[in-house]
Image (cartoon, rainbow, N blue to C red; front, side, top):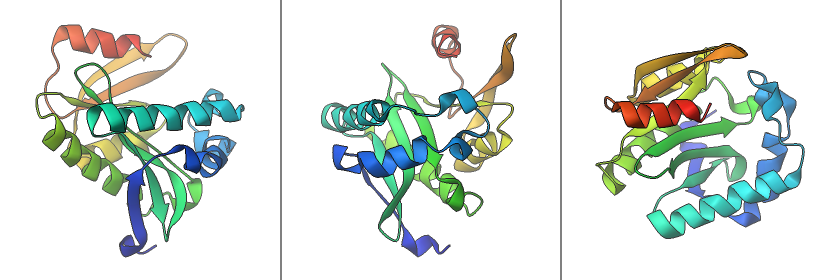
Amino acid sequence: MNPSDWGLRPLVLDDVDAVHAVYSDPETWRHFPEGVFVERERSVALAERAERDWRESGLGEWAVTVRGDVVGTGGVSPRGGWWNLGFRLAPSVWGHGLGTWVASVALGAAQRTQPDWPVVARSMETNPASGRVSEQAGLERVHVEPWADGPARIIHADRPLDRRLLAEIVALG
């Protein structure tokens, strides 16, 4: 897969069918099976939130493309004083550096758009590739939260997090 074929553009409602194809694929959620989007309305809500974030914050999730085709989403979303970095890509594009590229571009955009806000990525210990992408993009592991009912949650950030914010992020699960 050639990086010159990769693209990003703001996620919009017109992308819902392509996004739902990725988010409803159980293989996409191999590390978190209960996350599969069964209802199309969840994909609609994702796109609507992205449109609102772009309108209100000047930054939000992107549609990630390869040769013009949407293969997932990625970027940052505002979360009340911090940026949530995330990405979800079709398994067919895993392992080529696309996730790291998306995360790196998103980190830079967030730091330029609202430099006072920390950039935070959350992952699960059962998905070490996600944590590696966060680290390759420039984030550092700042916390590991053991969970009695499942795998530990790992938090990466571009700076140390104060206790209040860390507690807020941990409470998200």
